[in-house]
Image (cartoon, rainbow, N blue to C red; front, side, top):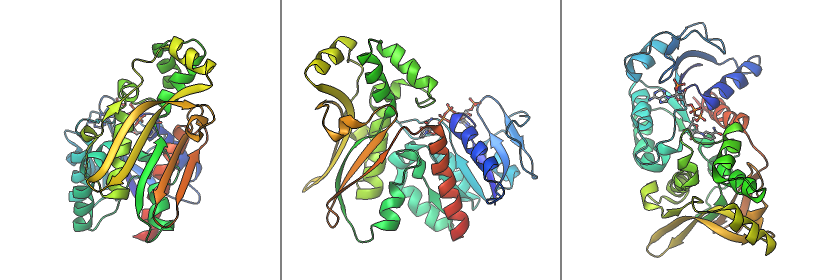
Length: 320
Ligand SMILES: NC(=O)c1ccc[n+]([C@@H]2O[C@H](COP(=O)([O-])OP(=O)(O)OC[C@H]3O[C@@H](n4cnc5c(N)ncnc54)[C@H](OP(=O)(O)O)[C@@H]3O)[C@@H](O)[C@H]2O)c1
């Protein structure tokens, strides 16, 4: 199967390295890479990890045509306000009969029902496991292992940058120093304000609610309050009382629809949500038939996001 990558930053490169390490068992070929500033690289034989980029293709449509790929891997930055240009790039791939795998939650948070219908109409697959909790199965957990189950709500710590910042503050660092620590781990959004202000968590919350609960919302409908006003002094004061802060996503099915929120919550350190350390994430799903079940990722990094993409690509290759 031939793959075209749109975006070749931390996640795109980690994905290419993973493919290289698994080439013997999974002979996928990257025939095109398209970026914003580095340009475009194309080779029918397959590109090396550090390709020679030429001038950028004039449009994503032109790039996809020239890549002759079967599947587009979309790994451009999150735009939590509109989901663009990723949504249009995904549509361009569908229009060419290409399957799509993305790590970008923007399109799922803004346009999931429409994109699902359009993929079906085009007879192609559309997967996005890496958008929430990196490669940890969340969407596939429900899709493949919980038939007939209705998700009634969820609670999660889904943004790792804020956890890393809060831990840095507990050690006396400023907000900016905490963000820098998260950036060195490769886990911040391209624009880290989207993490701190709660937009990334709001986009993940909307994506989960749309796919698992048919909520039909966008991140703009998720009331979000991030950690922008938190200070090291406040974190120290809470620590003396046996408490800490986490950016918590909550969803609940109500008679009026799905109620959603993202908020920096004060929690006892004994709370399971407070047990998320570093880049770790926790998601608890409340269901009708299985009670409450949870998935946790312990200290994931960009390699696990790459695995989320890889698992989707492998699933598609097996199913088509
Ligand atoms: N990093 C993580 O841990 C993580 C985890 C889960 C999900 N994600 C998601 O994965 C996606 C990528 O994240 P990242 O960390 O790899 O970002 P990144 O390091 O900032 O890389 C973004 C890439 O996208 C390219 N790009 C930007 N705008 C583009 C456009 N309009 N058309 C084509 N290419 C474009 C950039 O080109 P240039 O190289 O030329 O600038 C760059 O190669 C994001 O949506 C993010 O939310 C990331």
